[in-house]
Image 1 (cartoon, helix red, strand yellow):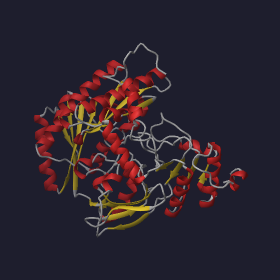
Image 2: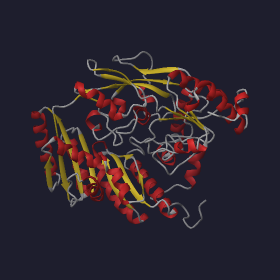
Image 3: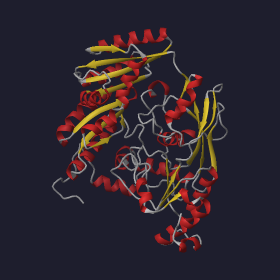
Image 4: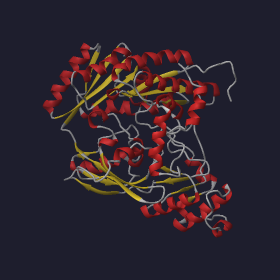
Length: 504
């Protein structure tokens, strides 16, 4: 790696050593564990790792490592634990909450080389994969056996299964088939102290405490994932999608609750408002009704008889809820085209705005219409446009706030707009996140949702796995001091106290 020669001769430094000494000791220690090509420490090599999909927050790490064996991961973590160096695990870097943003003076541990499908067993309908395997690659490998992996985030062509585990990712079919936590049987990982741990089991039960659900969605703060066993399910014989149009966004939102109240659990139930459909239609030509104030995409899958019956039932409910037009996909190509529009909503937003800020809150389904109306009012308040796409079936909202990042005032208003949306979610009985995680983005909003005692309990779980708080620290759980400070600056309906005072 051509590290400075004096770094090669340094003995491991104590955790309280100066930053330069610690960095030199880190590089020297890494050189004993990994080949030169697996260690990045020059600025031109580390800058590409300064952020994840939330590019507004950046920090260049001291170094980046790319191990390709679990033993190397163990050794790297033991070294960093000894030196007191914080470590941020990283998958594909598609996270939208800053969960993979480096820590100042820290190390990025990339699992990009862990991209092997270890085993695929069609009889048990399971696949054992390394964390760097892409989400879609699992389904591609299972396709010859007429099986697939159900969670399908919009970024599935790029996002890794390790990142999905860290964020508990969902997707357009999560309503019927569940999130990552419902489709993962076992996770193997390494603690900050370099110990290998296993959570869950391929059997119906596992000995000891059931900690699998605690690790899934823990945003890389408890262990570094090195292997995942996922559940595969049979491909349905048939799937069809209804595109239902509404002349009012509130009617569309209420229709979502009406479908579920009728006892129907669609394979997918997504909603987009008019600005979103217009942006998407121009981009991918999905065949959307761009005149509608909102559209719903409702999918049914199963046997041909089941699909025909469910499509008819859903159509009846949607018409009774105020749908002005109903279109049912007549071929697999048309069904995929409808979904391609929804899955390309984020890049479509990037074509019509210099920047966009993707929010991720969750509310009870019955309040979808209420929140959409509030967002319309917020657009006027902040002078910014917002397009709405979301997993309507489980109330997971993804408003995209459009702004120009070169304009500091617009960026500031976008942040206030986003905080207002998240705090509205809490007010309506929801949460500040659904599938994107908290990362660094939603730390302040966590102060609004959780009490000091609850946040201390979160830190207690963290300490049980990582007493030194070195594994992805300063993410997801806000400190008491941070929340106290945010309380002084607390956004109430989008307005800071004493708005006449300058902010620094």
